[in-house]
Image (cartoon, rainbow, N blue to C red):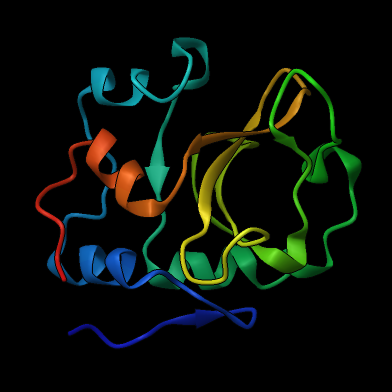
Amino acid sequence: MSKSVEINGLLLPSVLVAAMAKGVWRAPRASEAWYGLFPRAEVVRPELYHTAQMKRVNSDWAQESDPLYIGRANSKCQPGNLDPRRSLLIGELQPDALIGLDYRESATSPSVVYLVSSDDGWMRVAPNIESFIAALRLGELVD
């Protein structure tokens, strides 16, 4: 079993920690893997952060107050907004098109969201990290 990882007081899901330990948590080179979750125009330079990157990127995230990064509740995107104190950034599709975990509904199984570059806010792309990993075909899930 993989060691737990906490960032900004939030535990990374154990499946994500295991995927990183196994070496499967890395951006697929085939663009088609991304297109099942994200619009083609958003997938420019996808990257999934490793643990050290997550810690660095999230070091100031909990204090973020810029409306461009927090988003806003709206009918176009769900959830629309994101609470930096209840979320973690885990990757990006391109600069400023961030991928995150939204812990507001579950502290143990956060949903996966991304910041839509058209300024619509945050959109849910997977109900949990397991679904996200499976959709990107990152490899066999580890218990």
